[in-house]
Length: 163
Length: 163
Image (tube, rainbow over all chains, first blue to last red; front, side, top):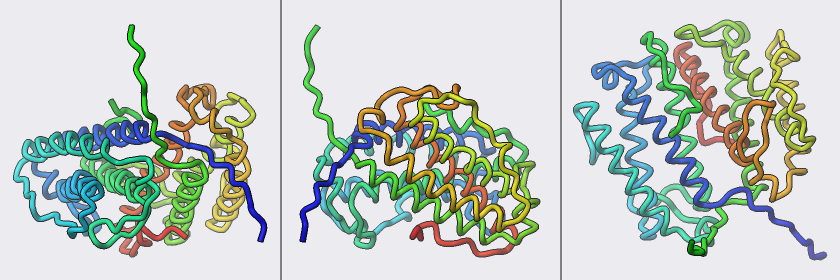
């Protein structure tokens, strides 16, 4: 067996990914705002969920997942705790979660990003992969939202506008 | 003026983001494959581009952008060089770009990820942000593709299936 020296290059810091994520969350907030109230809760294509339901999924992941990671708590994912009835309810909760995410994210050490954690007792991956998944999942569902908005004849916010 | 000691935490390495990106590219490849030939080039919702056109945008970004970064070449973005006429053409080019991306990505140093570069002579951001944008843009457009596929009555590939 030979020993191989691996040169590891840092791609980005934890502060940078947090800022990146919050930029995406700002954009998703604009997409929520762009929907007419009724369509936010009812409009759908191809049997997929309305955008309010997708936003609730995102709310059920971000903050609770980071809290789970920090507390090493593997409690199951639960989307049923929050059932908004208006766009205002949804936006209020969205903004509360912005703070929750900032608070818990700051408590994750560099070592933990590389450690495996069984998130929600179900998703056993390195923490950095779980965090990338939260962001990717948000972009993915928001991409759906863009089609809904276009199909409703509304101009969506610019994809590159974040803050 | 006071000096502040900043503790910088690494979030992930460059090898990890490359693997993550290529995982997403595999999923996008599956989405291309899932479209019926005709719909890949023609189906659209809300006046948006058909999925083949979106895939050509992604092909016009990934490899050429990394080459531009490595060569410090600020040549403009150009999508017109590649005009596939079949799904097979598109997939062949997609696979070629997989190699191009691997080749050029490996040549970016740790320092360069944090340096600002005027990509395509137009997008002046730190290199790590430009790379995140390529991945985000792919997830965003692929999210559109998922709605097209569902609207066509086809079951899309699992979002979490990458390799």
